Length: 182
Image (cartoon, rainbow, N blue to C red; front, side):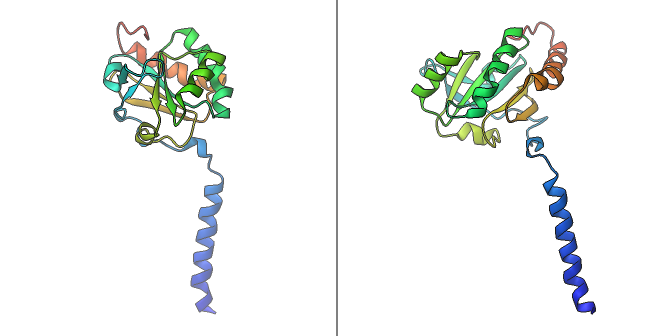
């Protein structure tokens, strides 16, 4: 009888771990980048590939990085939310066009509107990997010192903007005299 207790105990522990894991929301996966410097990049601009933008160029201001692609259905769903956020003038949003064709990305922005301060081309997805992107869309909030303060996995919604991103941006900007978000 006792020889069955060890396998039964192991089985119960495994079932307990699975039960806990199934209740977790994959959109709330903690990012190892929160509180750490934003991963560096130096990427070409989608509209003007001869020009590039790096994280160092963005030092001194609070900004958002929105990872998107023209083939991403959820990106289309969040696009109007991003445009409304940009229209408020709270902080600039830079796009990271992830594993996309340049012509498709440009057509997508012409059709839906271009809210981005600049969209950066990540053809191979290397920058996305450096940033720990699980899939598109994802949005990061970066402070004036280049520290990642928030990661939103999945599309941003008006509720997420109002309850999480905007209050954080305003708090971060209050700590930086003279930051007007642009």
